[in-house]
Image 1 (cartoon, helix red, strand yellow):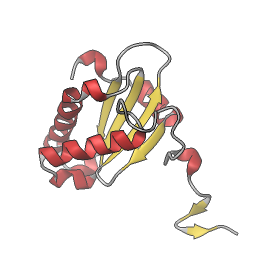
Image 2 (cartoon, rainbow, N blue to C red):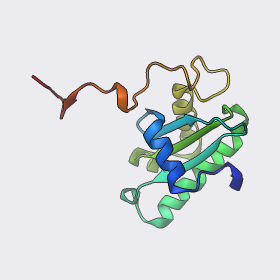
Image 3 (cartoon, helix red, strand yellow):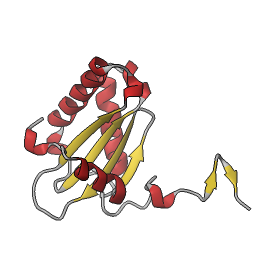
Length: 140
């Protein structure tokens, strides 16, 4: 993935986490935020140390970046996005990982021609749309 297409600074990640929206499937979580500046999308990949050692995490990051690079023409422009790798993604072969990434991006409305747009989705699993309860129990 080209260097100018990557999110690299901590503050860029924090802005997307804080003000962005999110969608998830069992293997990946995507956070995204529309940018006001014109240009291509920018992407960052996050793989927790809980997934394994550095070799495992870097391999997953490389695979995710390659999948996004090959499908870059399908993604909406002017978007910052972060893909978070979850533990079930460790056992996926490349083709299934590609399908899972495209699924979560389609679900989030980040693919061109998808039924929802990144700015207009009302079914976000983002922070503002969670029910007001803890540990699965309803409050009084």
